[in-house]
Length: 225
Length: 267
Image: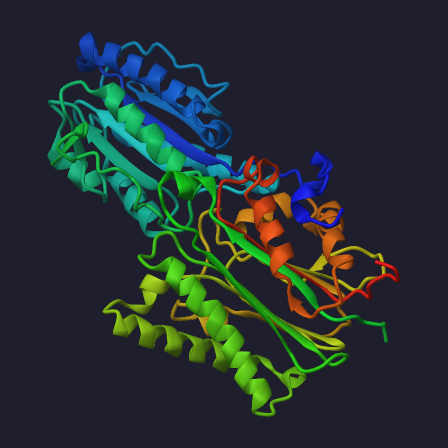
């Protein structure tokens, strides 16, 4: 065999490594005010999210989705790759303990990172994506401090999305990044965008966020607040 | 001392499918040369991966590998004994390389950070090995004794898989990994981040020997001509663009293979 492109490579000639993981934690508001159309659209959006992630061969192996809802604070799906992830049918409940949900969510991410480290699995910087139509009904200052600290230490990236009626003044104090307002109930567009962004992240290098589409562009699903 | 042949080299850089899909060019670059005469022929090789986040990472990578080769060539021509290079000397090279890149950047009205790229540089002398590295990707060597392939530096990643460091960073000289070791090297491979997961094993942190044994076969029987083999390099480029590789990574890939194993009689 005198040429490289004719070498008879065997699959065993290549190293087998676990896929690096990309955590995506969804913190979803299921308080009473979300009942009806908003929650229906959110549930449909989650189904789209799974389909979109599965459609990308790398994201399907690398992205891990977890869902935590508030209120009350409940872990609905622990971190799972898209093939195993089952989009839940969320039902609306009580008040909006957003602060507690954020703190528990951050804890969940740290636990998962520890598991990766134990098992020698490489990982990307996690994304936390919070969607709400209201404002916290609990004491949220510790959560705001934890987000600031986590962003500064590059522990995760936190994004806040407000549906019509959300308390954007508090979201601005919680999130280091500018909160976004969902246009109407365009949850599906939001999750298509989120999936595309995770596809880019799960094959990227340091801060290669250039190719991410601006969700607040005229044709996007959000408007800046 | 082992019997050595002339350095035969094949090298290629290929755009990954994720870059091709987004109509981005290959941001990897490589450069190779030999200095002096056999049997004291030195191999000098460099690989760089331009940052996708930098506006001119591809140009930065090209400038970095060319500058590295030129810096080594000038030192050699000026009578510097390369085998005695120490860390302080290598750090001066990094700062010199940064000055070259900064000058070009200023001429184009951009900053050094717009040329952000990694750097893997190797100098193989008769019985010494010099390596320097800033960022990810890796270099592996074999002494030809059949004891397998070994890496000197594991790829430089931060906590996250997507993070690394660049030779254009302010603290690059200090962060550089540097080795000057008394070690006879018969074969050397340098590869960019895009190939890491295919040829290095995370679980036991070893080079995946079967890959290197397979991929070095063509070079071992290549003609005794010194230096970069254009025909074999084109063939290596086709391998990197083939489904064999592309189905396993969608990133840009660079592979430099250099062998001075004595060519078997009758080959």
